[in-house]
Length: 171
Image (cartoon, rainbow, N blue to C red; front, side):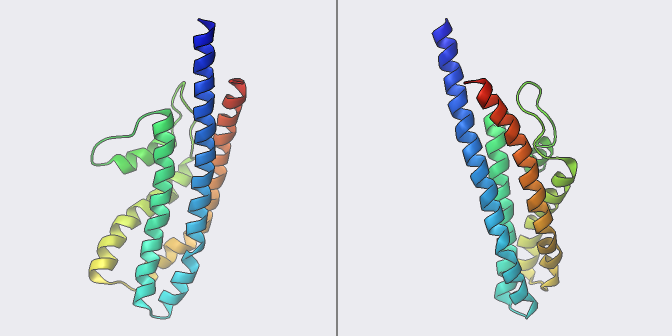
């Protein structure tokens, strides 16, 4: 019986180590994508329609990368939400602890910031790609991104510290 329990502990430990490494890379990728946005926005302010489309696409990419991180967390510790509002539920779920599974990942302020990007991603696709838009459309989102990314890093690092404690407990 002990060897089966030990094997399960080793399996869970390996899963958590792989998860933590991948989650840290996901956060770094969000940061990397975010760093490109000011350049696009500056070009868009000069009147470049292509740069405005690039700004919206870059914001979409950042939002998608964040969503990939959120999916990784949920599929490792719980299950993905279903239904028409799954993206909103996924984000809101990261602010709630899952008893016996994981602590809360994001605080409410971080959730609000990233929910705003989620909503903009959908709005931007329709408004910019189909109807055109002025560079002001993405400016406030780009301006908010450094703070949102910094909060994301802090929240995820706090969460991963709890994961690291669990990994050490499984040694």
